[in-house]
Length: 224
Image (cartoon, rainbow, N blue to C red; front, side, top):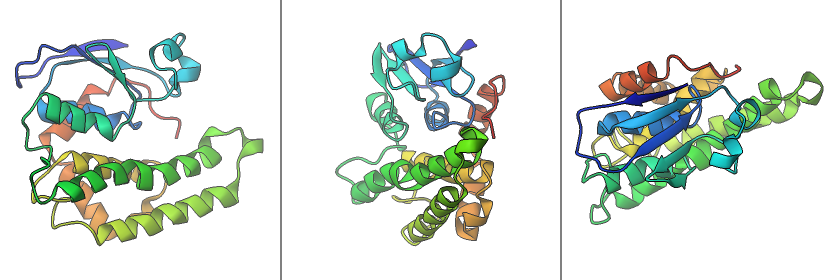
């Protein structure tokens, strides 16, 4: 299903299309688009699109989500796209500029959300839900669940107040916040610390988050 979303934001000449599966990693990009108020075309797909959507690999050779086209240029990394959107269509306080003291922390948290926190969750999800029953590996799933929990506890000690860094909401919070959201969706609630649970609760009250959730409602849910 495709639909066009028009928001009152900065004037944008670029055409933006997001290929998205409900609550998948591509939600980071959807949330970022809504926070920025950018107009975009949204292609909602069943998960996993490489299997369910004919021709999807012609759009994204990886077969993964997100696939975000900005004036025809493909981006596939859910932690990088929000930063590109904020800087290309900015200036925006949602990005931290290189001259700001918090820039190193911002970049660290931006990529931590995916590489450090979401990755072990995807292994857990694969070996508990996505593989056929005969290929599921309970021990591997549990090991990666514990790995995620350990990393999340360490990440909490690095947070700066109510937000990841810079004393304000940024794209780094979208990256981290999605990792907590995914944990709560796939049965890893026990690994989410009270501090991170409260952190995500604050983030989920944002109007941009609510608009992103509403925009994806007609999409098929993750198989979890």
